[in-house]
Image (cartoon, rainbow, N blue to C red; front, side, top):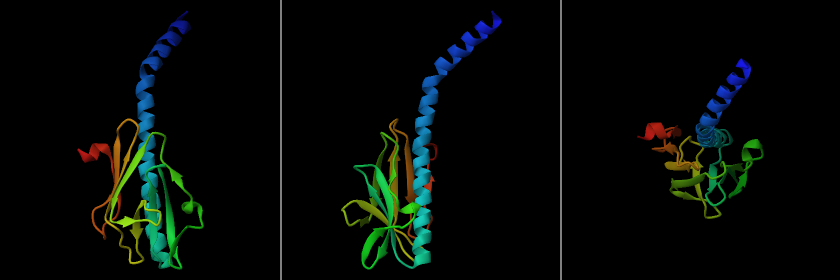
Amino acid sequence: MELVLVLVVVSVVLALSAPSLRGFFVSRQTADAARTMLALIQWGQSEAASQGCPCRLNVDPASGTYWLTVQRGGAYVPLESEMGRRFQLPEGATVTVRSDSVGDDANPCVQFYPNRRSDVAVIEITGRQGDLFQVTCPSATEPFRVIAPSEAQ
């Protein structure tokens, strides 16, 4: 009998906490997407410096995808590695980019140069619950960083 009572109590506690746990995991997906984008940016900066050619982080806000390209023979082509694939934002997330550069397909992009400089940019990733993460570079010589909603206040 005691075991049944314990199971009922545990079930009630889990039922009450499930909605808040679901919100936590959705917010984690947005945070993970921002960190993945930051890692891709750092890879692009490193690739530009080591290869001696400009690289770009391309963003397609309509599809929620982003990917790296490198300049080869005057054109930008996807990297020939795992980091050259298209990355997808979590379902329901949106992205906006404030940068001076525009890619070949008229989508926004962030440019990385061989001298380790990059475009000044702010990339905002908004989750489906409205949580806003920024991947930002305030000046051409500063590193990119992620600003979480708790830091933006």
